[in-house]
Length: 293
Image 1: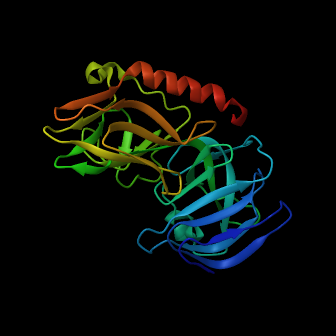
Image 2: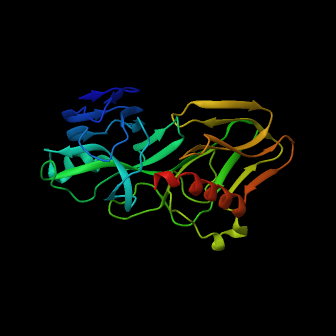
Image 3: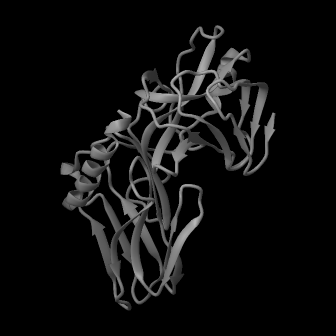
């Protein structure tokens, strides 16, 4: 079965079942299925995500429930999650294709409720419905995208300095709590940060307790900014402003959190998110997603 770019494969009820051989995935492919704690709605014997930019996003439907099954995953350690894909009947050396899942190519989002989910697969095989079987599943988490666009005669860049963040291609079997698309302390116009709900970084070793920073070089200023939605769509643009924003995809969080706006221009402008602000966001996040725990 081939899913072309921007296509959707879905089941509409918990009694519906899809079974196939190899699932070939293009760019921005969506999987739609109800919130459920029982695997087996979508079953395949192989998964091909070799196309450049291939990605899967789970779009849950139906009544929100709490995940009840604890999985031991390849990337996010031991977490409760929702099963999305079942892999069996294929090559055991590739987990019937499950081993092609990475945190960068598999995630989930409930845009109605502003929930985000991080993709993973079971590190060890199971015996049901056949032996061996691997589960591709998602765990409640946070996905944040930092963007700047429309620079005028200058550069503007984000940097982060957070402990315990994995970058690059994660090693299966090495549990992580946070993952970023770029290395720490690396100026960049855009980066993505993903982390599980129990990620609680110790900022005591971070300079000035400031985990994020943004700089615009003189004599220019940032002409506009854009914030990305969970699917990459631009949510809004504002001209002639230095604007700092985060696109947020997480349980009970708005898609965009506006951190600070600076309308001055012509000189160096630096805006930093302090440890206190991060703590407020994390506290809010924890208090609002308790229904998922």
